[in-house]
Length: 455
Image (cartoon, rainbow, N blue to C red; front, side, top):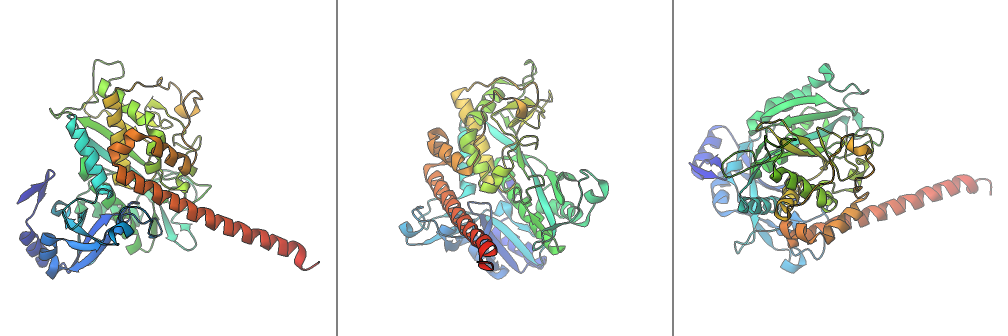
């Protein structure tokens, strides 16, 4: 038995024999691409021992394709490396049986080049990089993500699993899909806390236990796959798209975070402070707010995400903080005990969990290093306070802010940041081209209706 990042891990041979006895036939060696989408190679169990020891080859550029799997030029991994292979190395601490699939297991992988150097732009590596920098100043992060998502009866008609808005309604809370999700999550090592229907038709929210550092990212990544996979087995479709319906609520992925010092105590707690917060907490909030315009590109990584940031929608619209304030960017949960933590309400449900966590921790860490001060605490709903600076209103504006934020770029990694910027701008260009073509078609349709028959 070995230990990896604080998590017990079976030896390869032992794990192989356990899975063989359980009837496992195939194993997914998978990783998260830039957008949080799982990419993998499936291998028969008979080859597991070999690949777990030697790695699995896969074209390295798959980490950095855009949301349509289109290759992005000039991103270090494509023509620059002759579209060569990277090596998927299994992190056996993540090895699990997939309960909603027959005879299938999975293991999350880290990516390396054949010479042994890590693929620095892989999102899991980006999070690990930030966590190492946090550890360098004496802290570790305790984190949980809080996801909202939509369940649809049919992906073609987009019909929701329920209509009308009755948030927290018990019958909907106990519906088959969320009930099955709550049943299966513990089998994947995820401890669910609460489940309820939300303010959108067919919208749900499920919360689960906080975890340390990289494990928190792995569990959030796994949670999203579990929700989508379990929903599919029950004949429904789950989507984490931020705002699929213009007249319904958006889906967020709030990051709940506290820091632990080397003594294991909550570094955000100070019982002698009027608000119960330490200087570490104040500086961490200052960093999140100061670098939020740039970090927003990672936390709201599609144009659709920006439909979420509107007044009176329980989403932030400015660079604000408040005590238990759901309209603030940083919602302070000051409980006077070890549960004291901060809630970053910027991330959208579609964001990559590894990158949402990395951006939250990196911006807070910059606040610690620079001992950043805070704007005044909001004493009324922060979203209604006009003196707070506004958030960027578009993805392109956020990308420019990220491009200009040298400190955050350095902390996340220059190669990663450059790839991320190019990838997102390629997506924006594809969207603009599509919209233009659709607009031209609509214009011609109107002109035919108006002129063709009578003139």
